[in-house]
Length: 150
Ligand SMILES: CCCCCCCCCCCCCC(=O)SCCNC(=O)CCNC(=O)[C@H](O)C(C)(C)COP(=O)(O)OP(=O)(O)OC[C@H]1O[C@@H](n2cnc3c(N)ncnc32)[C@H](O)[C@@H]1OP(=O)(O)O
Image 1 (cartoon, protein in one colour):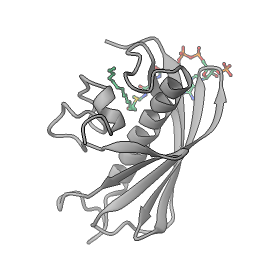
Image 2 (spheres, rainbow, N blue to C red):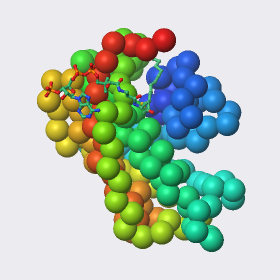
Image 3 (cartoon, rainbow, N blue to C red):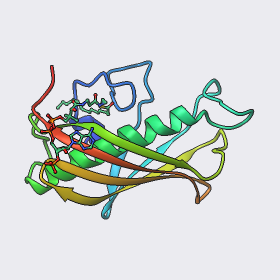
């Protein structure tokens, strides 16, 4: 499915959460579904926290990267660069809050992000992690557009 995923338009990228060029990372693959950005991802067996459940820091990392990538995709879409992203349009996480509603079982999860508000360089993104359709974790990420790093 070449060209389907947002991360394919963000290369080279060695970010632990979203970099397709980091073989040790989480390797998320996110795509647009209507106004939401969706990712389906399966944990590795060693990513446990509480017995049989996902480590909370991994949930936070998933939400962080999926949200920032959603904000970058949204900004590119708004700027008419949906097919090939503008490499100068770069964002980092300014603030993130995470709420753990239920433990996350160690099987496939779905992340769903939506852009809640844009104010100048600030993009507020709400993301849920669902397991079998049930919301387990929710996060609010403030992505801030900056001049490109590195
Ligand atoms: C194409 C290839 C690409 C490959 C790469 C893909 C990339 C994927 C990468 C994925 C990465 C994955 C994720 C990661 O791991 S990103 C890594 C974790 N994040 C960081 O390291 C960020 C570190 N912080 C900074 O760099 C700066 O402090 C930033 C850039 C955030 C702001 O410093 P800057 O000098 O620019 O800001 P400003 O002072 O002009 O303020 C501007 C506005 O923002 C507001 N504000 C400021 N700070 C915060 C804050 N912390 N929370 C809330 N709001 C904040 C401020 O009030 C103001 O608002 P207003 O007064 O205008 O209303």
